[in-house]
Amino acid sequence: MPASNPEAAAVGVLGAGAMGSGIAQVAAVAGHPVILQDVDEGAVARARAGIEKALARETEKHRLTPSAADAVRGRLRYLVSGDMSAFAPCRLVIEAIVERLEPKRESFAALERIVGPETMLATNTSALSVTAIAAACRRPERIVGLHFFNPAPVMPLVEVVRGHATPGALVDAACALVQRWGKTAVAAADTPGFIVNRIARPFYGEALRILDEGIADCATIDWAMRTLGGFRMGPFELMDLIGNDVNFAVTAAVYEGFFFDPRYKPSLTQRRLVNANLLGRKTGRGYYDYRDGAAPAAPREDETLGRAILDRVLAMLVNEAVDAVFWGVATPADIDVAMVKGVNYPRGLIAWGEELGYRVVLERLEGLQAEYGEDRYRPSPLLRRLAASGGTLRR
Image 1 (cartoon, rainbow, N blue to C red):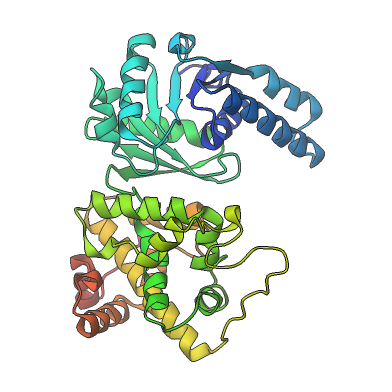
Image 2 (cartoon, rainbow, N blue to C red):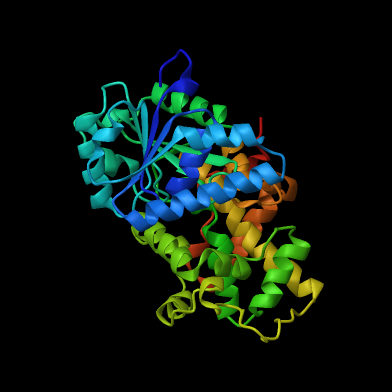
């Protein structure tokens, strides 16, 4: 992006699905002329209607004046085309197409031939390797990950992902840009799941394990995590909201990306729900029944049981956060910010671990590892060091 008047620089968004349309709205509200393009006429029409509805809502709530909303509309250009030449004047192009590697690689190879040499190229991938996507380009050093969270106009977090060839200056420029857009930027290494989707895996995976063992039902586990843990939603109601197909796909991608590390092993229960098309709210049934007349599930409000559930899931989450620091995925501060702003955790996991005490977390994991004999519960080397030394990761 140019150093002078960066808000005036044109932004291109490739892909008019939920993420692409949301990103286009954010950029236009921030003052950029925006080109939103897709090969699917229906997707572009839905994007236009969705942005119009969002702008009308913002006007009704007095977060935008009518004239400001009109100015945003005037900055948006919608295109139905497979020809990317309209992106030639853009100083930033963000790709938000289907979450598959080859279409993304093909798109970036084509974009690189069209845009100028100073144009920043960014992918909104949530799980694929930025390095692998950038490898299709002659200049992979111009590619960076900008992982917005859905819905992009509402969610404050953006993970800025550095690929193998991405220079620090480009990461800094990308962070500065999304912060000008009113978002919170955190820098992440190009590892499976980046920060949030990696560290959050035990929230779902260990809850599913507790369910599969028959320790508690979905409603009781959700109650424990909400009422005793302070989480906004329990894991099962959140998976039903996200969609079991989406949640399962992310877990499977992280599991495969880490060469089938048992810490990220997907659940057979969730796979069965996906196979049965019981995807959650969008299909009317998932872990819960959302059909008209269905009786709400009643939790067993047993605080002793609830505390045991919470302690087990929380130990796994803290260990994952500490391990992400150990492997250089992100700084402790960025990890805590990411988990609070990206998935609405009640507090950062590094801060939570230090409040509990790393020795307590280690003892819980060692107890689980001794009971089950599984590498799934292995403590991070850094967790062991912190427990032994009484050290801290907070500065």
